[in-house]
Length: 180
Image (cartoon, rainbow, N blue to C red):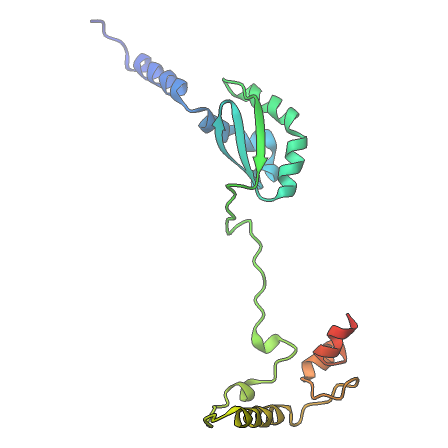
C-alpha cells in the first residue's frame, strides 16, 4: 500500500464530487449568469427530465416570451453544462409567489373609504327584538333615517350622501356608477 499526500487524496475526492454532482444543481449555479437578473427573478428551474429542462415562470407572458427565445438560451446553457439539454419548457406550473416578488396591495382602512360615515354610526347597538317582517322594516327605516340625518343630498337623485362620496365624485356612489 502506497502512501499518498493529503492534497492528492483531497484532489481525487473533489473531482469525484464534481462527477457525482447532479445536472440540475450545476444548472442552478449558473442560471442567473446565463439568463440575466430580470429573467432569473421571474423564473425557477424545476427539473431535468430526459434532457429537457422544466422551468417555472412567474406569469404566462414570461413563459411565452421565453419559449420564443429558447434556442439561444439553450445554446448558452449547453456551453455551461457537461451533458447537453435537448429542449426547455416554460410554464407557470410550479411557480410559488414569494413575499419579495409579489406586490402587496395597499389596505384601505374603513375610515379612508368615501362612504365612511364615522365611528358614531358603527357603534349603535341593536336594542329592539324583531317580531315580524313589518317591525323589522320599520326598525331598518328608522336606522337609515337616523344615519342619513344631517347628510348632504346628492345633486342628481336628492338622496342623503356621505360627504366623502360628494368630494370624490360630486354625486352619490349610485349616480357615479350609473355614469360609468
